[in-house]
Image (cartoon, rainbow, N blue to C red):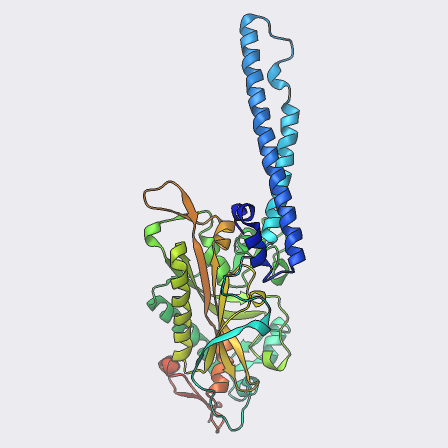
Length: 429
């Protein structure tokens, strides 16, 4: 959520930044409504304060009159009670509408983030060269030939958009998860295993609700009266775990990571570059997260991107890193860099990690603060998150980039001990 004080003091700068993501006319309408509600809220607060002071003065006058034996039959303190209740009800309604309108605004993109959608994304670094493969087989064909993924039985179990890892495929997936856990722990992140069912308040705090409310799987109200949903990413859970807390300044940056399956209602891909395990309703991901002081955030973003790039590099994959344009980044984030692996079968890059800086946008919604040493005032922390990594994208990239002319696939060196082999071959060969 944005800072209301910033909108009051520098509306023009806020409008200019938001116009990188939204139509300028839409921005004007939204800010007009927000400022109108803010003025109404402040006027009501002033009126309520005045009414309370008036009632206190009347109560004191009535008490004095009673002591003097001149008090009226109807007590003065009762007069105006209904009017005060009506004003307080108006204030509650106005504050609720203002919070709703504020929650609909996206974050302000960083200065170096350009307007536009995918077409405006910019590659900032490239690692390695695309592998020379004479006859490319795609990851779906390879996974079937090597008996790694059973797509048909996955659909039988869960419907369209689901799959089932089998045999060495299941072991490769689990080896990736375990290796990523080890790597992130060695990098100084604390390992968390959060619940997969989260309260709706957690989705709001992360900035996913209300805009992306329909993109997740919700429990019915009878089963979950408070509102619960299946987490779409463990970023949501890590942030939510620290809601309404004041973090110790000396312990910032606070680094955490989690492994969870991720559950999403997004359309499963039948397009050639989204087949197989590239896009579905359930996939595995290891997520890293940092809570920082504002002045630590820029360095933390660079550190997290370098860490993710190092992970993909250790797997022996060709990839690139891109700075996303404002319209292609999450609405909650000020700045996002995507790490994208090369997919030989489509000649395209696919994102395996988005590393993002949220500024104080999420912390403001979740009320996560820190207190400056020796001071009483609290300030909002900055949040950063990144996939480290999404295995459902790594899996096909490994198959395609490391495929051999004889139909086998070379196992990345860092995973060979976990799998007990240096290559994947068809069963019985």
